[in-house]
Length: 315
Image (cartoon, rainbow, N blue to C red; front, side):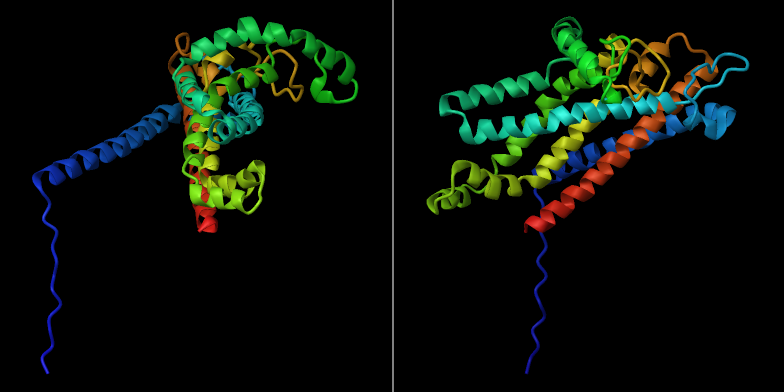
């Protein structure tokens, strides 16, 4: 009895395939090398400030790195970044989900294309435009409502207490949400549009309402993509510079009162103090940037794991 040797099948790549593989591999390697170089640059430039401040760099709210006996740290910056980012996501996530579902499932066919284009165009508008509109239009419009909330709710909920309003964490987070909503909505809409139509039509044929079909078929299918889009929006919110720079009355303080004037974020602090800082001040700013880079990286890593779990659960 003869034993046949299994045939070995080798794929011969064409010249075009080899060129395409080389180009994509080079692009991926370039991105990886760039990230590594940025990380090395931030770490090396941050070392003098970390050595000078020690662990107090993460717990100190004051920012006087260029003074002989000055103390400096990123506690207030990190607090402002986290609070404004969370406020932005409180508005961004529900509005983005609702908008994406409306465009895909409820909008008339004649409007669907125009709405999709409008959302994608808004995602490309520079942040300075949103920041200027928020400063000169949105915040003055909200001023009477915020005064009412402070006057009537300030004695009940401490977050509404404020001596002055306008340049607050709440307003900065709200304006930042305007920048995060378009990109988040665009990604969510694209993900939800991939929901299997035969399952959607089957749910409707079995008597489900349109909302019932969305709730049981479309949203579960796009859960992983919606989480990823939300994390991308959060990354945009954490790193946003112009809104905080234009709106904040800068104060290196940790304020639990969301409507009280004053605050700072890492990105806005770097933008404001970069030109006037000397050697140690620049090192301190780079250390703050490294902290923001690390936080953003950890959020993206966590988002990737959550998305992976959501995709496994959906299979």
